[in-house]
Image (cartoon, rainbow, N blue to C red):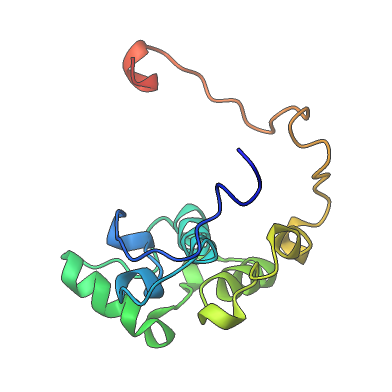
Length: 141
C-alpha cells in the first residue's frame, strides 16, 4: 500500500467507547488521524490515574463531559502525576488545531515525559515489565 492509499482525509463515523473518543468524533464534525492523539491522552490518563478522564456512570453523561472537556479535565491529587505527565496529557487532550502531534508523532516523542526513550531501538529493547500468562483465556485463545 502506498503512502497516500492508507491516509484518510476525513471521517464521520464513531466506533469507539465514549470514554476515549475525541471531541471532533463525538460531534461528528469530521476528523482525521490527529483525533487519535486525544484518545492517546485519555488512555494515558486512565493508565496513570486508574479511570478515564471523562468517566461517568452513563455514556450520555460521559459524552457531555467530553463536550465540556475544559471544565472536566482534572488531575486528582492522589494520583501524584508528574508535571511532565500532566503536561503531555493536557497537550494531547486539546483543541484540534493545537494538539500536540498535529505535525506528526515525532512531536509527541520529543516531549519531556519521554526523556530517555531510544525510539530507534524500542523494538529490540527488553521490556521493563514482563507479564506472565497463566492460561489460554488470558490471551484470548
